[in-house]
Image (cartoon, rainbow, N blue to C red; front, side, top):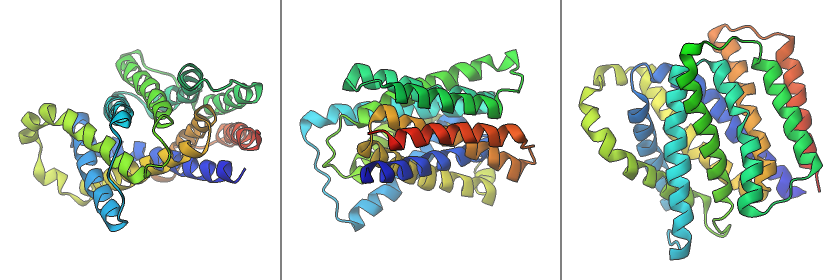
Length: 290
């Protein structure tokens, strides 16, 4: 039970950090295109994680047999999922992003069954249904423009690949430091993206990037959203079943909607509080499940 509580806290914090990320990405992506943005945020994250790991005297050794899963985490989660997520965020609305994000936990349940052979219990199914209803109540009354379909496709790919990555995290032995695993998977993302990004860097407007709003946003995305967020998410998944842990992804649209009201003057009505109640009910069921 104690592991579940700590796992729930870590996963909730990670998802909340990523909820705030949508507001930041919307601002920064106007100056830094998605591909370059992902590369820069991972360069910052690798530097931050490396310094933390060195200061904490972490062991950087990984057994050969475990490198495959770390590579898959870097390729599928850190690279494909984040790139498609930020492209989808740029092309779509926040409502569309929140709705499609709600499919991630369902994908995680399926992948956890296929790859990890985890049981799909009635409580897990009911908790996912409750949380999904909650997200739809919060954001489901917006009209989706057909011109944003491409953004929706990118976001669906992001949700699918994130779910698959989260299951692969469970395949990495828990005795490895999450700082080390996250650093290596982030380095893989940098290596994979570098050949595509380097020729495009000359087109970036350095003056605009150095503006406090943009540079501060990049630091948030690199240090808080990427380094801290991935550490919390990976650690939380080590303490819970992958299929149960995925449910905490629903905190992302809650925080995103709240910050939209706080920072962008968007309206929050009864639907937000009702939807949040459904989501918290589903999360509570997972925590209490034996």
